Amino acid sequence: RRKRPPPYPSYPPPHSPKVAPEPDVLPDRFIKNPSNRRFYIFTVDNRDPRGEGYRPFVAAANQFWTTIIPSMSKEKHEYIYLRSNISCSLKSCPVFPGSQVNKHCCTGPPNVPPPSPSSSSSSSSSSSSKKQEVATDPPIPLHPSWMDLKGILHMLDNVMEHGDIATYLDSDAHFDTRTLKTFQQAYGWMLPEFFNGTRPIAVVRDRSHWTAVCHTDFGGPYSMDVNSGIIMFVKNRVSRAFFQRMWLSALTPSPQDKRKGTPLHYQFGWPHEQERLSWFASTPAENASITYIQRQGWHKELPWCFQVICHRNFDKMPYIEDYIKESITKSIKCDIPKIKPFCTPHGILDDTRYSALIDSLLDSVKVIPI
Image (tube, rainbow, N blue to C red; front, side, top):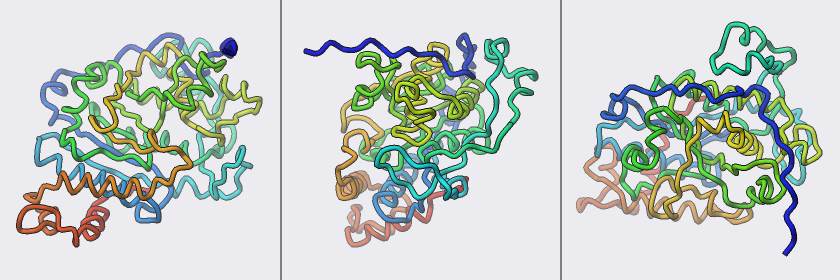
């Protein structure tokens, strides 16, 4: 058995506070009555939701989930497809590391200097620290995968209200409609500090290849190996500041960047922004705002995330398409006006109308360019 190397030296992101931010706890009315807040799920992708591959089926499945859930609860659920085609129109891109290929790169954060030590020790945004955050160069280019952070900031600034909850899902992930649970029913018991805003960010540990790449157990710099395919967050002061700092961290070489020996490797190298999320989760002052989603088994709890269980070289398309059809068929609710036209008189899905149902669901998807 080979002796494992010692952990690679780490350090906090330059914009991170020295101490954990004061929690922004929500009033009890958000907990006692979930109808006082809205629950969003959203995808960020620069490609057309009606394009080729699995995206149309995944978008339709998420729209289906937000269509049937309101019939069971007063909770308000909405699905949004943030299309990052405006941000990802750059064609003069750096050479991507390894064998990765992408026709476009995207507009990243403006190049701003890190705060001084005195200003970073405070969790609040003082006027002096704001004055320091002035762009000195044009925005940097980034891999399209980083756009989930831009999408999160868009949701926080333009869509959500204080206390609302949103879940970012990778473009190959969707909520499993067969569980027929609302967001509160599925996660309220598991993440109480998340729902009340004490820890307003919830993610999944990534016990996979990424563990061996980054974790201190294998010579990496990070004590927490996090997957960015599912990111839940509550809108409050702490979460907004957290994601702004993470977005700006794209400008700074991380410990794992230095370990790779390539400056800013993860601006374009796999796993892109997931590396930054692991860096933040491994920083105590940032980790204080994060709670971790317990895995309940592949079929026992939502969301169902295909990218977690499918190897990247695996042909996901037929698997996802078949699973979504089975999921929709078994959870169809023909008493819902939008669904009824696609059902038989016996209250089950008319198989000959399934493609028409997918088209109808895609017609209902709210697409917002960013």
